[in-house]
Length: 229
Ligand code: SAH
Image 1 (cartoon, rainbow, N blue to C red):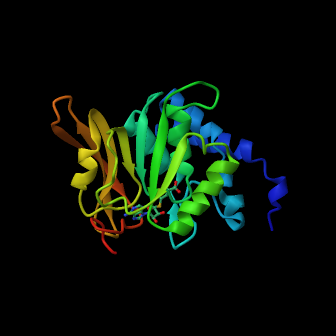
Image 2 (cartoon, helix red, strand yellow):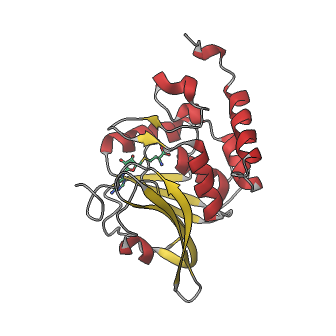
């Protein structure tokens, strides 16, 4: 039995980040800094804390999962997040990925206008994430909303970057409309058991360019434009 008190989480975090750098997945200073800063052990269930720095998804509440660290890294790199940006996430889960994005667009040691709005379908998970974000000090830069993120969302301002962390049958038009010209969105698109991670770039004139970032496996998006109600 591993004694949690004996685990040096910071050391484990550094080891994982170094491996992701060696593998060429982590490349950008601000993403590396965020992965070294946000404590993943605070976003997993007590029982799984000892595995927080194994590069794998882990179960959270409502039969959902916190994504594997390499997937969070791939998505943050592809989004090319910058300080002061406004980010929308669909699929809050534990709140970990939202905290990573927040650490990039609004670093803990700097004044910045950046923030993250994250939408979660299950109220129990929205509360779980809010508690995790508060305990780790990200509740001043991450706003959790309990709603169906596949439906029309009532935002007036568009977002610089959008990430969807659940598998969608197609890119929801409602999200394309919420992306600024020049903005980027990452979203897993496919069936409920296998997807392709898609990078959507909106040009300054509003055109859409799609890039295929490879195969992936996410839990299904629910709701209006998802797989199940
Ligand atoms: N980003 C999360 C992991 C997400 S798992 C993390 O860092 O922990 C996918 C999440 O998407 C689950 O929490 C699931 O409940 C949520 N989800 C599924 N369909 C949704 C929808 N239509 N709107 C908002 N959230 C949704």
